[in-house]
Image (cartoon, rainbow, N blue to C red; front, side):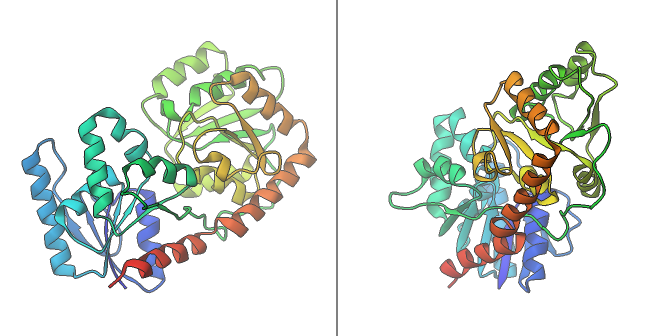
Length: 347
């Protein structure tokens, strides 16, 4: 099938869809306004700027790309940007995938944004979401009687797997998320301060706007020798650190799905995550890890303590987590589900 993806070419999620679909024999092209090294035919778009004139010019570029490539499906990822461009370009059949902030944050900013989102989703022949939570967030902006199809973002369980090596000593606590307030890294630091009397080390893998405040918070709590702000790292490093971890922690305030959570579970690591958004859909509370209330450092500290105090129970949680990924969240299953969406709307 000839597929034109309209998306952020620098996103790891776009990369996985492009390479995964190409690997299954589809002819894939990418229209993007971000520099990309992906090994597929690309149609560069100008950067989006404020103003109707620029937006309409970009829509014309998407339309020209579709006219030249002649796709059987146009798939736009992130509706408040690329979905709007594809809808305005009137190309299709259009599949629109909501990612999170495009339906959770964008429409709350202004009534005009809600109208734009409604317009874009109405133009789509099919709408997909990674979680039931996200499908529910998109529902108010869909035409009557329409629903988003839930296509969970899967994990490559052949790559994300236990290493077989013993965990780090002292026990390593890992959080592989952007350092942004939505993901609660400050809550994790406060929780770790509650555990100062016991041995552990912690690494926050990622970068973001909260890093300076977190560095000050870590120093203020006296945790400078135990909590490392590692920064942005390569995917292989994320895998290696998860394989060495005793527990992975995701204290998010907002989370549309939870890919990082699934990666940790695939590696066989018990997970602690906030009871928000799509996280309860990817973590079996009490079986593969623990759900805690958001913005509750004491509750998070208690859950971490519980995992570190019971190595045998943690190991069993890790095994069940990997089974969960293999049974419900494999990357091949995600690709097959998306192909089913395409088949349902292709001419």
